[in-house]
Image (tube, rainbow, N blue to C red; front, side, top):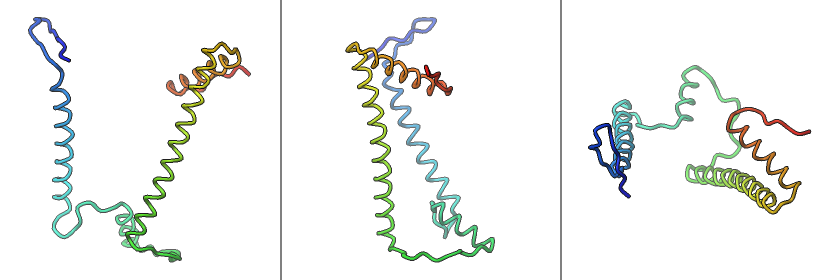
Length: 144
């Protein structure tokens, strides 16, 4: 899909395909620069990208802090990352379920409003007002 773009002189034509390639190149360049800078900042013997938990633990130990308690169960590294992945999957499942549920309610209210139900039309109006208020960042007015 090429699109004619004109300037004041009317001489410029473009297909806008180059914009996608430039943006992709910029993302790749940012990624590569961050890798190079991260490796140089780490120095010789240090790891390039350490987790924040390790950095926080190290800073607390340097300050003289001691752990308050020992863990009851300390799984192997592979098991620990597996448990973390399961926890992340459960959390994302809950979030996706809630988003889908709200989307379904909104669609059902819209269909009922289109069918002509006065109660459904009122509910659809209230939901639309709430959505607009969320977009603006202001509280919605209620009819109560």
